[in-house]
Amino acid sequence: MKLIGKYDWLLIVFVGFLILITLLPFSNGSNYNAFVYINNEMTYKIDLTKDGTYLVKEHVVVEVKDKKIRMKESDCPQQLCVKMGWISTPGVPIVCIPNKVMIIIEADPNNLDYDVITQ
Amino acid sequence: MKTKEITLLSVYIAMGSVLYFLETFLPLPSIIPGGRWGFSNLVLLIALPRFSLGNLLFIAIGKSTIGNILSGRLMTPGYVMGLGGAMVAVLVMWSLYRSKKDFGYLGISLVGAQANNFFQLLFAGVFIMGTFRVITVFPYFALVGSISAVINAIVAHRIRMKSGDIL
Amino acid sequence: MRKRDSNNLVNKVIVYSLLLITAISVLLYIYFSNEKPLYYKRTEYFLGTYVTVNIASEKISSVELASSAFQEIARIDSKFKKNSKNMKSINSSEGNWVFVDEETLSMIEACLEVSDNTDGAFDPTVYRLVELWGFASADSTPSIPSNNNIDEVMNTVSYKNIIMDKDNNRIKLLNNTMIDLSGIAKGYAVDRAIEVIKSMDPGATGYIDAGGDIGIVGPKYGERPWVIGIRHPRSASADNAIEYLKMYEGAIATSGDYERYFIEKGIRYHHLIDPKTGRPARNNTVSATVINKSAMLADAYATAAFIMGKSPGITFLPRYGSLVLLVQEDLSIYKSPGIEGYIGK
Image 1: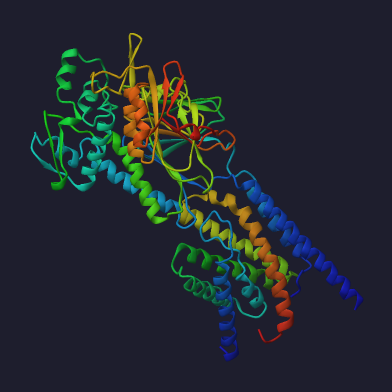
Image 2 (image 1 turned 90 degrees about the horizontal axis):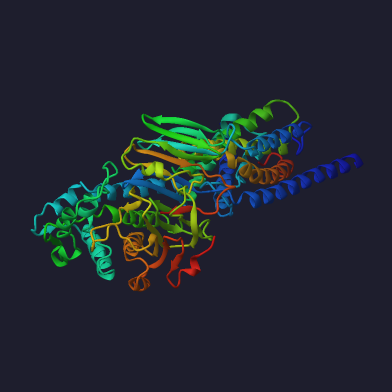
């Protein structure tokens, strides 16, 4: 066997192609999502680049607008989750304790001037 | 099995395990624990034209197992990754070699290294990290693996030319 | 002969240029991809809030580290939550001695120390008041209690009602007082989870965030600080920061009047009840952040700092290892001397 065979360029191109493919952003569409956890289970993945409102649980409505997300409506007594307002970074999740709903944003590496929020 | 074949197989496994062991001392900035350069695949490359598929797999299993015993990592996820990766690499390289197309050491070594990487990342993704997203680090491992693959190809070619029937 | 030579030369050129290209691309790739998070991050619901573990290790699978951390957090959650067997046995002791284990005892001891150091601004027995105001549970609807009710409950509230007999591992509660450790348990869980991670891999890096009580496991990528944003107390977005602190180690916690509150007739009533007045602390402070080496102490001192406000007492806190940052109603900021070194992003 020779060091470099006649068809080795085929294999080299194939490997290069493989590397290129995996270098492309891996995921369908947007890289900027929010995850809705209900009872500690990841239940919904919401694309933050598309505006809209979502009913994630009975009486619990989540709204997405301009790459931000908020709890729009919830039937909990203190409305703490609604009062948290809009979030757009992974620094702090929105939590609705009575409904056991948690909204966490996936890191958008371009939009981080801190790692985590103390509150 | 002929005596000569048994002797040769043990020589290959010995060389492979030592390379596998020494490789653990080579620094590799790695995201995933157990990432390695892949220089021990050199013995598989040298052995490729000489042995049957069964014997090649035997060398792959032998070098991963003994190499991991030497470095004290037997039965860790790293071992399973290394073992599976080496076996997948053997399967791919052997099929390329047997395809009767004019492939050289360089091409076969490159593709073999990538097959090895791909399996290891897939394994790490599914069984250790629980997500396919690790595949995004494939380019990094593929490039590192390509360096060692090219070196492996040159060395294997030389050794094969000079050793004749000895190895 | 000549043909073979030139063939060799071509081969060599191809091989070496391939090597060169791969080497350069590896360097470029490492250079540009170093920023990519190598961290494993998991958020779960515990201790009445979210708990995030963000961890990286070069030795052990970070998934394994996170799982062990969550195991420890779950243990502490079930041991110190309001209705746990452990807490019930203490709070139903009706003035008799009750035996407690070392862990509970050391937590109560830490609480009493903070209470002493802050002249009762932090008080582990304030729970009855918080409950009276309706802030004890997220399921209840808070409202303003009558003055009579407040006075009645005030009689049971004081950390001085906790009598500790350390030698015999027992405590006694006087005047029908009640201890609640579920608040401070958040910080304690962070401290313990970090210990668990460090025992598995002393070189692990990352942070643990239990509802804003943040403990640093190790610097980002082993060399850079974690940038902690202090929540803007009056922003419409919960993830808006008013100030940034850089931390390599230690812990940080914040108490704010935006966490649990209701507004009646234009007045904000929040959950940080002053044990001395029985009413939400009102001293112009809207959020208090404390840096301490322990997350549990940071949490306790942050509560105290909020209730003390910008008073002479606050200047004593650095003595107890706590650096303070207060945000006032007009959004001006008071800082303990020594905290400047942390400011920045």
